[in-house]
Length: 250
Image (cartoon, rainbow, N blue to C red; front, side):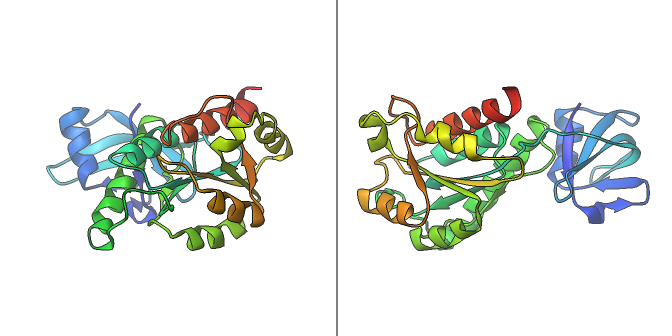
């Protein structure tokens, strides 16, 4: 059943008014009609309502709430992915697949080896696109919330943001080259339900030794993600899958 995310101001008693691009999706993509059912989710409260379409126009779709349902599709831990800005559309892939795998938020940052530097003048549209990708991926994967994609941060701002997290990890390829295997698994063993986790990944050229040293000095654990060296867009997905397996399947 198709899911759409709404704001609380769209709810009036037992009805929800859907507007914007979701109307096009309901009418032109899903080709729904009056009487069809869909799911409406409130991202801020992680509540989901089973709804039935009551009215359709070119500009809006009005649905009636049939019932509020229990839907626990979120990770038991809250994971933020911090990615050194990579080239092209690689970060879009991280957002899309990372949302499917359960990330709660994403922080792009300007790393020393980031080839792409964020242009603040053009950046607003890019951040809007990133958040749209997260929303669509959350709907497709039946998340109860839409992960937030923050504005790109400087390295100093990333360090400041890290102070609010329960666990802090930096994926470091030199640890993998040196044969380190246990730090990531040990970190997972120390986590418990409700904890917040910040995991930092470098851009294509990786993080510099100075950046990793600074992160470690700020309480991060430097970890290898297995014996192979992963691409910047692959490493976050590996970490999310490993955390999901540890908490949701074991």
